[in-house]
Length: 369
Image (cartoon, rainbow, N blue to C red; front, side, top):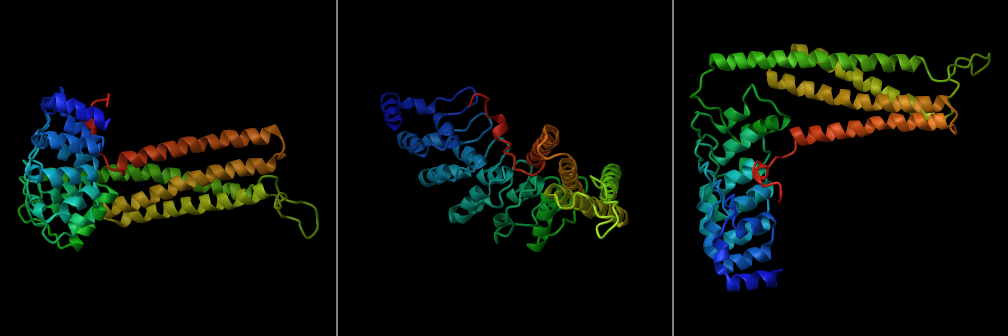
């Protein structure tokens, strides 16, 4: 492949300047796909390619930073250090883009380079520094938060500091709460230029009402699980021993492994769901919306785990009550375990939708790449 590229560049070196319909040059693609050796060849042929931007104003270095490709970033910075000063169509430099994409390694690479310290507090078209974007997108990048050069009191065009954004009452996320705590520990302060407007108060009221509705729904589910598991604890599969003697009143299936698994998982479901109900009860005492949201998230996680434990209790309890070698017992186990495919799939999707990092750049890459 390297030989082919060398032959093409030897015969038609002008190809490094040609861009596709999105403004991407060969160097953009080399940076995106981490073809470091190919990138070196392109730069050796035409270093000006490092300064060419696509239709979004992004250079090859911006592309590499948005995807966290530190190897291509190092090569571009080494050969063309001036390209670090370029900004995209939104006025964002390479550090802005690395932070927006939540690429911690790319951020660390830039912060470790003394020649790039001017990028740390540079503002984009909206007056946002990289720290503002960190607070906006809930990126937990301690290397930037704790960096001694970072201006933690800088204002954007909306007169907001990074801590103002992280403390926004009408946008919640667990990562944002963590970022807010880290900013406070690093010495960041709230701005004094803003006053509470009527709109902010209305948004806060709307958020509180929404959380209350969510809490009511979750409480109903948790209470239902607690009720079902409580009843199952006294209506044991197989019943009780009614014969007079030392074992009278003892569960008949006590010695079966499946029954023991049923009793343990049912108890776990009972404890988790009851704990969730208790937390929902306690949240009525919280006036702070952020704390209220965090407690609701705790209870939500407990309820989700209780659901899984309850299904395990059903499967193991049914298996214990049926002959272990029968096709019916095996069928019940297989059908019951299908729940966990849905369980894992939905939780995985929730994780990627709410927690995992999202690269805004990659959403603009063409489908045929």
